[in-house]
Length: 428
Image (cartoon, rainbow, N blue to C red; front, side, top):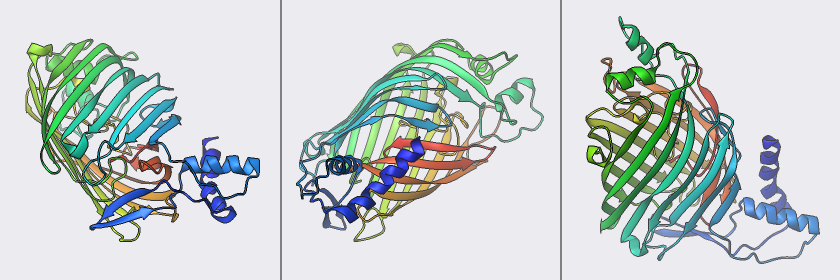
């Protein structure tokens, strides 16, 4: 059924171009090399539904569309190998709190979803920029019943002469474990602009994990072994602490950037006085760079992404270890399930080529490739082993006012890992 809906949506802009000329007044403006481009004939899914209504009513007169809302409401039918099939509802919105010339678009998202793997998630997230970007508030709350696939610790390399516990924890044979737990989380950061595009800030995070268990009958599991090694409870624990942040940002849009840079460096500190089992210190880095490759079609883009998390002091609990898909929006590592590789420190990089297919930007495409590396507690060092993945995908313009795309990707990695990844907005 999904493939027939996608096929119908892909045909909508083609039919409209031939059938009628609809004047669109709601425009999207992009700044490129000090020149302003105004796209008066962008076409998104909302326009498609309007045209279906006109066709049903047989109304062929010229019409002026009303100003479009910056809110996208989507029945959240989704799929990826980590969660299975998902049903739910998602709302993604954008609002401009100041002049476009010096104020970044503020965005928010909220959703309630259920998946065939038994995952139940509700969240509210925001990324708000006040007038002239003087302040930035970023964060959210979430409650979830999680069922996560687990393939052990490290990057999947074969250890020499491991003992019984190391063999299970390293899991070179890629045996699949399933962990189940409930999480209650809150995080909030506040940034102050120091210079144009540069912010400094601080924040707090609270994560309560309860009812943790590995499903099935196993003599030993990676979760139990790692927890025993590092003196964590394998059933319940808190991860609460403080964050200090440095951010630099010049990208032109947070949903689908055509140009610019986004950098966020976070010192994340678990604190025993706030309820964590022990003090831990982790440095997280997020760097994104975008190059528009055309003066006339700025959505012709080469994009680069690096995400990393580096252990400074103390060992995190097993479910908090950085790894595949452990970035804020769980979009890294397309080609593998979330948490497929993980370690005390983790490094990830991706490059993506984005290109328009239709001139009205309703349909575009991407190709991408990524690599990741991790350390472990059995002696493997960061940057020693690398695991690659890659894929290709289509983009349907869902809301032209906010550059929100419906993303359909197929990606593949090693160890037989592959799958379809659907979602709103670009992975980075």
